Image 1 (cartoon, rainbow, N blue to C red):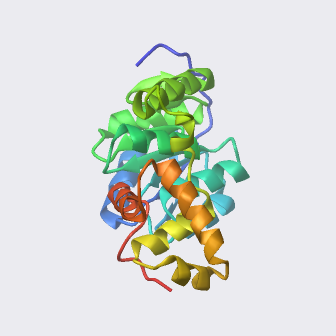
Image 2 (image 1 turned 180 degrees about the vertical axis):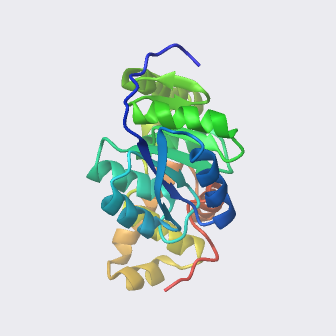
Length: 239
């Protein structure tokens, strides 16, 4: 890590843990409770509960799993940052690749960590995020450094010949994510239109945008990408 200075504050850093695996949540709580300056103020098990708890408890930092029921972590992060830009979001995931990191940062995450991270390292990151820093691959950055990091990695992944490489890393809108969930469950455009009460053409327009943002060729590849990254769950209850 670099030597960016951080200002310690005497108050405790309040943390909300959002994960649907009780053992993982309990393990995180026990690790954090050993620290005098960290306080776990609540838990969430799915995306909707995460938003409700964050609104009620106003935590400084949210530890947020990407693969959640009802709403995935990217959707939750984007909504949290829209409602309260100062909140720190640390994305936790079992799946790590460069595109996933970029999607998370675009959605508003301040840090991205794999779930097998050592507790002391995660604690350092929580403190950094609470102090307004960003942490990716153990590199600590301010907002200017983060923007430079994003631009560098977007170009590296999308390629210099892309017309607009940034388009591939714009987070999906809530409606696009909803449609992607229907696609993953095998629904046709006509069926999706009926479920959502919109026209088939509107569904087609959204699908075009989804394919462009995910940089894939068809709806099957889009569904595979969503499942692989944990953005949707095939076993979720479906209406």
